[in-house]
Image 1 (spheres, each protein chain N blue to C red):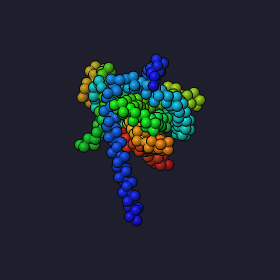
Image 2: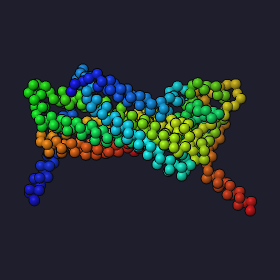
Image 3: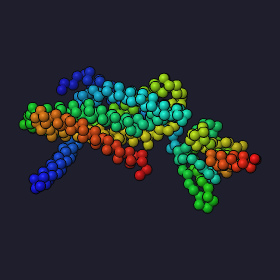
Image 4: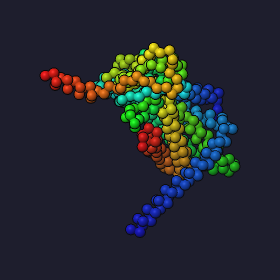
Length: 154
Length: 260
């Protein structure tokens, strides 16, 4: 087969479009452009109940994503859930008395950790633990309490 | 009874013989492929006939599959009030499954069958024996550049398919059905992981490209040199590679995404 100049150009165009497609997937479709979990510091928090929280769930401050959950473990001694979070290093000014709560995005949405900054002058460092935590809202417990209080009232 | 047993034995032996021949063929092709890096012009010609000519069918089917996913996903998701997740649904199904698998099936039908027919006809008209007479190895000169071209084209085509599909889903979901534009993209970006989803999808498409090229080229090279033989080889290519793609997809999915 004769290789013409047009053919070479068309093949070059094809390969370029293919590579552009892979690039588009990486940047526009996936999370690669967003938060990069390579650089950051780890903090932990203990929850009575971490509910539907999963590894890779978002960690936010004031609604802005600053990191993600890197591991969830069970403490045999205290029967608590120990959640380790990876916070991006650019957000290194979280006060040590910040509190962590587990929220749900929408009624049926995914659970995430919301951090509320405290007023301390010292900042959280790698390996620190957040003392003030609020557990996940378990819908069944809430409904149970509601029904119970209703029944008591009558 | 004895005749039946003999037939069974013969069939089994033939099966193993074919498997052995195809493995040796693959080995020779792979060795020839390394040499192709020094002669890229041969590969460029094949990239044109294998990749560029499959481009249009990939774009059109990707667009329509993305649009159908948008439409179907919207109807189901809106029952749960979760239309905002349409982007995740469309992108996840395309990047993980439909992109690589449908592209590979179309690729087998469009490029694989054409290659089998081309090589089978070369064999029938004794062009391959002619090359051997001139001390030109047909595997290196004919098969290896086609193999490499298919191997390169397949992941590129699958990526194009997924992207066009995501855009098609956006056209229907955001353009026609009124899903929020920001939610479509941001939920997608939040849920689709580059390593987990996109890299695995690319690995899948590479594996499928390898399978399609192996089956298509071997069937052509091994065809009985008659017009009937070539037609049977072409059918075999489409049937065998489609089945191989679908069963391999299950195995790969179980390894990559299923926690087995």
